[in-house]
Image (cartoon, rainbow over all chains, first blue to last red; front, side):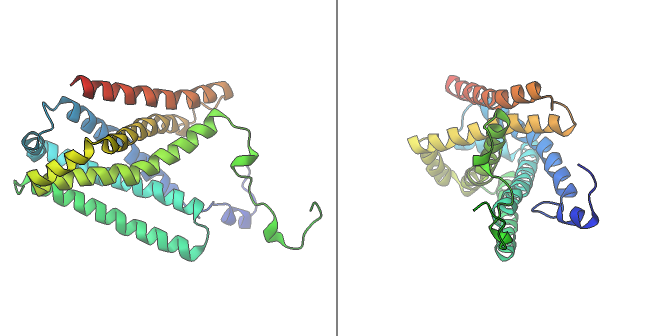
Length: 127
Length: 133
């Protein structure tokens, strides 16, 4: 693929009209997810039971709470970037695209905030 | 139909799924997007329900576990775990492709076909470990 004409380059950026930064962040968060979700999978498999007290005490430990907080942030961030690409591909009308991306941002911030509040409450012994 | 039309909007802009001959890369790419979006909504949704129930106390956690261990809960959990391992494998393939490796036709097709298989095997191992536990 050549460099094309200048107007072709402007028009050729795809449905998102940009994206190097997005692309890189998707990779950074992907690597984070391998570590964090991998940790969650092995931790759940190695817990002696899934009873309330066992899981609560495990989550209340500082290291676990830190990892779980990072997991919430990293998975939500990665998901938000990925869902954005899906929406940009399938929602064609500009107004609708703006609306669904705005809704996606609210959902992502809401999900991250809720997850962090839960982790912090457990870590500080509130539950 | 074949004549040039003054209405340019009627022309197909880019060929979609039905135009291409199926190959493993296409299948794995579609699965990557489907499982990724399933994880974004069902996966993170379930994770937050679990954390929320833990943070709300023993009764809420018991209610969550009751739903999670019902037949439909297990179907959802199996789907989420398969989505994760599938997305992990095709995602690792993407990271390899991102550094510019694995584009030779035979090699590319092989790993495109293998990554969903490895995803299934990892899902089976995960549930075997749970049931063994």
